[in-house]
Length: 334
Ligand SMILES: NC(=O)c1ccc[n+]([C@@H]2O[C@H](COP(=O)([O-])OP(=O)(O)OC[C@H]3O[C@@H](n4cnc5c(N)ncnc54)[C@H](OP(=O)(O)O)[C@@H]3O)[C@@H](O)[C@H]2O)c1
Picture (cartoon, rainbow, N blue to C red):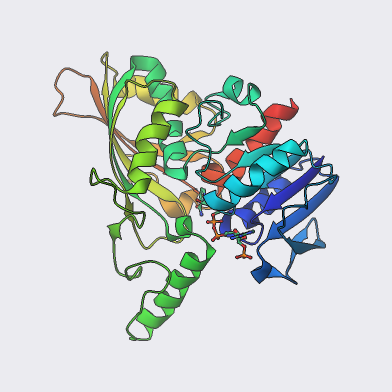
């Protein structure tokens, strides 16, 4: 397959290169694109240096790409993804540009492979927080039909990109040296701090991330009736988002049923050790493929047995972005 990555020098782009290597995707040729800023950079793929090329409108003409991954933000996707599609490539887009378009599938291969196969040239990878949430609750939705989700997130700094991650590393060094920190990439200090997600607040008081979680969860689970109440927060963790999830079902679902369903779910790993007080953590989810789910307990404030609490954690650069994108390619090759 001839593959291109737009945004190859970014946090998701790097991970895409790594995932294509690790999953032994049959790549015949790989071309890497970024902005003019990356002119001269090279990235290794299968021990061979690949030059990063500046993205221009004509790079897709006659290039013969089978798949183009976009991970350079929504405005780049809006401008260039239709051009890539018209050149004959299938576009797998990590940005928010097309996610809510009616004719664009929001692909999570473990949940909606048939929607992915019905694509019309562009498949969107959902928001990372929504993917991790849906991976944790989809097996339970099938058990008792979820009516309401209250989710509070603890989101990693690399979710805001490579420069934000570098800022966390710099502030960690500065704090250790007793120096004061000056935020440059994110709006508040990231070290020794927790703050409301950095996306803009809408007229309803919800930030952009929260609105995506509401809309995309319904689209991924193909159930517009699910009520979702999110609070999205950044924490000084380099990588892997965590989510505290409270569910209300249509029918009672027991802890034992939930554990059984989650232990059988593809892409999910049950981490629920009450004796050792060990549950999903970013340090265990980082770099891995599975979404970790645990702390499964009855919500005692819902005495009719229709409520459960869980805690989930997933690497947002892998299952929340690059891995999901490559799994979408794998669904289409099957
Ligand atoms: N980070 C995550 O955890 C995560 C998870 C899910 C989805 N996403 C989405 O994935 C996308 C990329 O995020 P990221 O975190 O990887 O961001 P990032 O680290 O800031 O990387 C952005 C990439 O886009 C390139 N780029 C920027 N403007 C460009 C332009 N005009 N033309 C061509 N390339 C351009 C950058 O190239 P230069 O290096 O040359 O500037 C870089 O390669 C975003 O849409 C984001 O919302 C991110």
